[in-house]
Image (tube, rainbow, N blue to C red; front, side):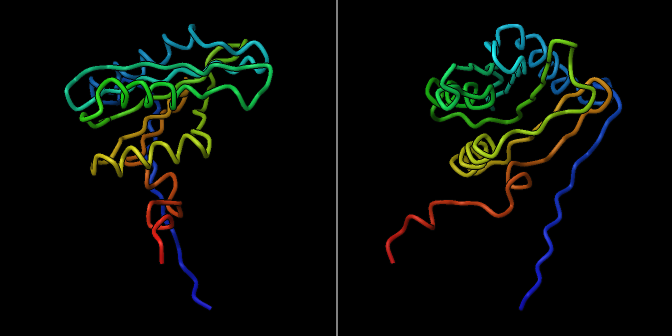
Length: 162
């Protein structure tokens, strides 16, 4: 047997003011866009704001559906829109914020597994890391790349014929 250890580094901040100005703006936009979320069932309103390498900011919100699998997460809405409109421009950073009926979460919520896979695929596609900012009211978490969120992952190598 071989034992392997995987280490993920997460940088935690007590306030959005501790972030770089560009990252502060993304967090602000992610929080603002939660108002456009369609979450009548879960009341879990997610906003995502990303910035492309060309400086363009794209936002997305979660869109629920009574048939739950038919909905889509905010992260994927933003990434898919960015990739369809700017297919040759890499995503530099994404910020994610969550609000419920009682306000924004105190601690940040991480992306689901599907969103992690899409973030990783986008990172791999452009051969550049995507910085991920998870925004809570009392804590901000920063992860330097999507690979850190999904260190054991499915990629194109599994699709190659032997």
